[in-house]
Length: 327
Image (cartoon, rainbow, N blue to C red):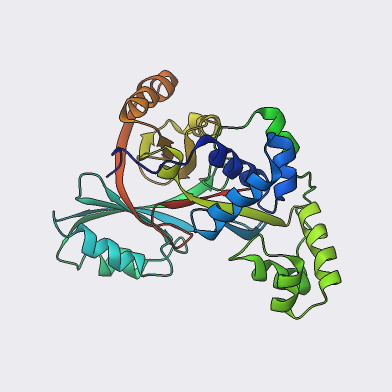
């Protein structure tokens, strides 16, 4: 359950290596050692252990790709039935997130769904399920820049280290990958650190062409890497989703402000009375209390409903309790 002590929290050295990968998922051990002041052989060994064990996964995605239309679901269920309903939801390809509440009688989920059309799951299947008490479904109107799990950064590097580790790139909104680029990006989707030689074998292209294209994609901001790691292994066992009622005139400014908070890994504006949703990772319930009373309380938010995650059943990486951060 969220908040229980985690015995296998990674040490600071490993956490700093993970934070370095957040800056650049294709970072070499030599460059990481140089910037972080570590022994190169130690970095090689630790990265191999972190990546080889599956503790850390680096995947790739296309920069500038729009977020798909989605709905936030909050499903109340009969006590003792949550696991069954959550597993059924997790099996669906159109649901990348499924969380069980710490209370055991609620499920939070994200459903990829086109707006404006009745969704069969929301309007028919869930209400017809005997163990489902109620379904609240709200459409995502806006995803705040910097306010996604893909943007979140583990706060264990200095600003100078983060700058040195982050590769520069330019981003032209009109720039889109061509067919060859798309093949390379697809080959990297499950392994963002694959070498040019491996990608060439997967795509059937020449290694020299792949190497040149990889450099171009990175420079143009079209190749981004996501680092997947269990937040509990980083000493952050408290996973909470906050639903806030914010005056419309303050919604954008407040969303932007919270997107920059180091504990926040998700900020969404939605339909419904609770129109701002914020997801946080924290070290303790005391930290959650402080976040609510100081960070949120000081902003004049009139209403906050807190959903404490007991277990992450499904996250986009396909593994439980795992969320992405992007470079």
